[in-house]
Image (cartoon, rainbow, N blue to C red; front, top):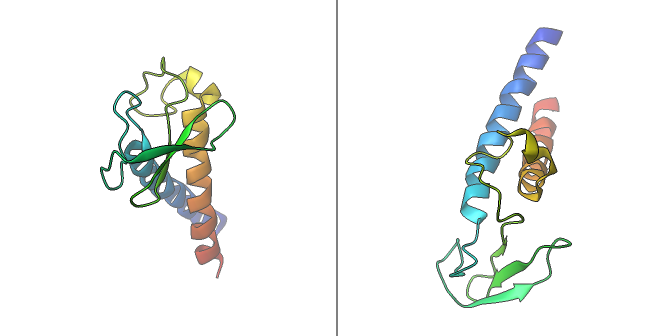
Length: 111
């Protein structure tokens, strides 16, 4: 395989991982004024341990975990679209999800 092919393939894998993580990230946002589970819609939610400085909520019906928005001033439609996004926990969480997907895709690619 040529180096160009490998680089193009890795770029494609990144784009796919980013889009999949972005779709998941949008589903995980929680309306803190009216908490409900984004997975099943239940309002039977309990506060759980979360990232430092952020609350997380766990659904008692389906055991789904999601986090409250980290910065109420965050007005990004797409995380990473503004320069301030690099300091935002939402963007950090999105990139962790992208990296998880890339690791599994890269493992499949290297076989």
